Length: 518
Image 1 (cartoon, helix red, strand yellow):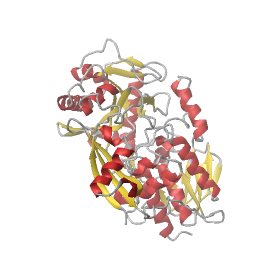
Image 2: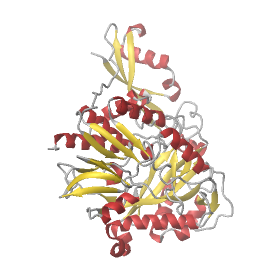
Image 3: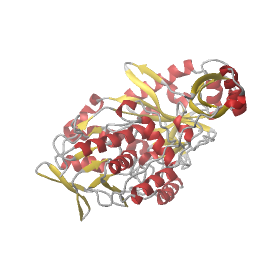
Image 4: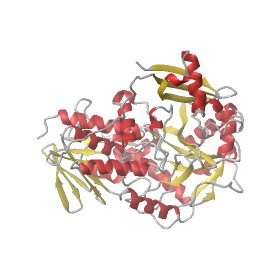
């Protein structure tokens, strides 16, 4: 049996494989030459004290003990299997497709946007202020909103499915094995597109099909059962439909609402994205810059309660950049991403506050269950009205935002389309401004140097989660009123991130396999 060993190391020790193995051998009281093979099981950085420590859990194979085989996935040929329509090729849709193939079904995916190669050109054009493709951008296209992101793989929903298998699936398709043991694994926007493309190739090589540029405009329902989908004038018959469209597909919610498919308004979160120099965050979190050559770009996780309202950091991107995440030309929406190296000179994070049902209650009479969607849209339009006539974003120095002062100038930013000075504190709803200001004040006392005019806030960070839930039966996972319609992932209101969406897609596929599908 392999031996499991825990080591507490300095940052300098942790980067030297020889030092790590020498220390492991001494702790086991064996010669270094007897360690035939080793692998990291878990690695985390503890920076609560100075100097920081690296916690390492190793699995060691001694003498002739056979090392573990690499994980491999053999998906069956499903060319002749029952076809299942999947709307959306984000993590929920892709992982649902892979699991369906394990059950012998043939997945047919419909994606409104372009494949990853063409999508790269679409987002590059957007960054250069040369126009928005409303169907292919940072939110829409192959891989969903997560494709051009930091690729964070942390989830609190590990009980919903096989978390480790999901990570191994990503490694099998090209992700670094480091994601299997890092405490906060991430892939990086430079590597995610290739992994997504490899998953698509797996699906197609086994008989599945992925259609791009196919925006679903209607779902056909007869006698309480889904029977097909429509792309404009084209109709596609369907035994079952997995709806995995992501949280930005407002037209899908509107289409379902008009068709009489029951939806539910739900709480969500919105706010701003804050950007600091990465060196400043490193100094705060690691207590100095002495260890930065041995440790990754520092991150943070922040929470606070302000007047009974939760405020927290969301999608923190160390060594990252801010990008335009709008899906309509009359909006200003920002998000963050970073490459695998996290090598940018900036750190950014969404800072958001909870949006409760009564915060948009005044819109319920006119918009019904889509009131939260309308509230979200109005704030994005207000942000655009306070920017310029392209993809520039309204911005304000952080200390000025908290003090309610106008910023006479702005610091440099990673946001390529550019920023425009704006008094964000004046046009955000007052309850949001007060909550965000209170959160920043709290964190400024906990993290010396965090509340500074070296940092700035950009608006708005609004696509954290869906303002709408598509209900489903807790056992069958079908819509309670439409048989064989399976709402899935973030867009349905049941996930919040790449891995939780992937696990939800797998769970949907399992439920579908157990159903009495015609």
